Image 1 (cartoon, helix red, strand yellow):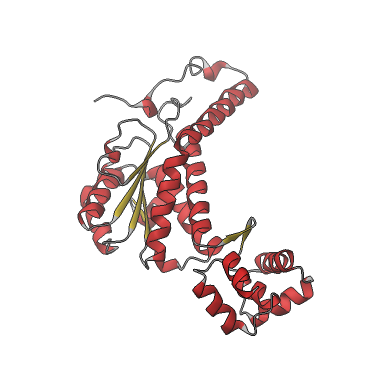
Image 2: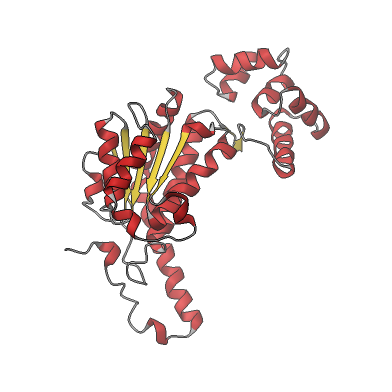
Length: 297
């Protein structure tokens, strides 16, 4: 079996355990920076993936994040943030982590080899035409992830493949392939390190651009956030105030009238007659606050 780059030997690994602690950390930190730098080469592919994902949401379909082990945790973290940050309905986001909830307590490796488990998980999730599956595997050869990607293609879903090894099997047949060609790990094979760092950055970029495409970002503000705690309610007030120019007290009153919707509150401040009128303008504007404000103006 040929080892990929994720199983290679780092040129600073020799004698690592004999160095001074700060020197060890310097090697590790430099490796993290090198891993982060590879994302630049994948920006065009990340953009293409975000477009596919946004189109799936706009068509009423779902995003299905698939992974195992450390890569699966990176995928899950991104998926869990989408409803709160961009107000995407929870039922439009599916997370298939090899081993499911059990993996959150014990990240056992055996689950990632179980193709039957993968088939059962994909079937239970009812992956189908129009869904967008985001499949991640550092090696690009994880059986659980490969099996779900195959299942998704057979059912007519689009597949975004993300891996750290060039020529990964996972890329075969994918609609978009994102190669994050990270250097060998300082701790050989420990892909929670460099590979995981690059994956996390790529996921951050991907999901943020999805939010932009959906009209949920305006001048750097998350204007479709779910304000379900004190901190986020305060943030929502500040966003309304910053965009519309009203004071914080008025922003709070407008948010009350809009049942917490930042976009609606901003449109009320801009002169919309009531929340239902604002909602109608947003609908006609494809949920883009910028286009809705222009329509009101």
